[in-house]
Image (tube, rainbow, N blue to C red; front, side, top):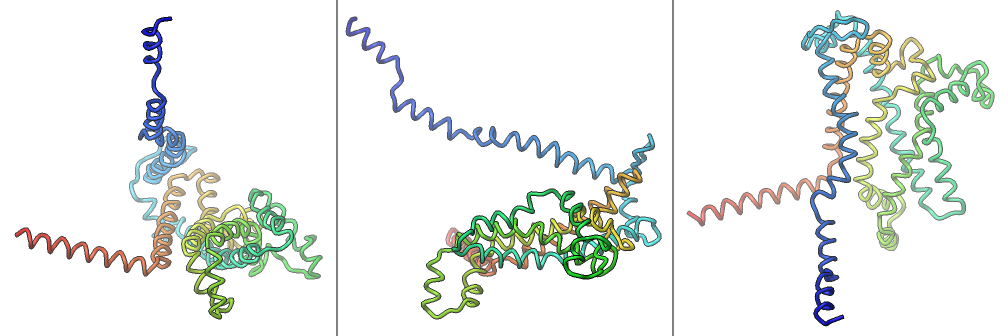
Length: 336
């Protein structure tokens, strides 16, 4: 083999540096994230965006699944929900009231109790991993399993809860026991999920902060107020917002345990919508109800974000905007 052939063969192979550069350029291509996100975007569009916009279209029609004609009626379905003479007025707003009551009763426990549990599970003790898994385990079960199980456990005639407590309380057919049952079951079911989120947030707080505070003479309450709560602010906002939204969409517990009773006192807005849309086939009116509920939830979520915002950060942003505005004004004056 001649020197010329060796040289030509060696020259035909790309240098290692060129191969590495080509690999980096492919990884840095703007199409890489698009390729990975494309399946999610397709599913999100098909099962979220399209149904959402199609639901708006349905709400503008007298949409009955059993009838061939679906005439356009504009905003009439929405107007009926604010007309006290309409047949849908009382059931819908009674469901909205019951939904609000459940949010009011359950959210304080679903936010505070998991935090206390997380602070206990964050400590070092034998069996900590087991207890973390044990408290999280109920959340793995579906709402139908939870509802059916607790419906029998809370039965006023042969339920095991009355047998253990030695009482004769009608947990699912009398008030206020029906609300106590629904709130208690929901807290037991979902507390572990919020606790795990809190545990992750507590793990991001440097332990040196607590050591320094302890050396300065700060007690447990002072450490909790000045270190734990500020350090958990983003996690607290996330847990609060998601818990409010989840509680406002409560359906399975009430449907399975109390069946909306007694006397429709636990019949939530979602129960009214599903009954109207699927049992009575009046999809247009049910769709209008769902968007009214969505608007309320959007307002509540925005209000929560505003109330729980970091005021120091907001003040800093205002000062930065003021400084930038003053700088632009000064540079414009110098240019003149």
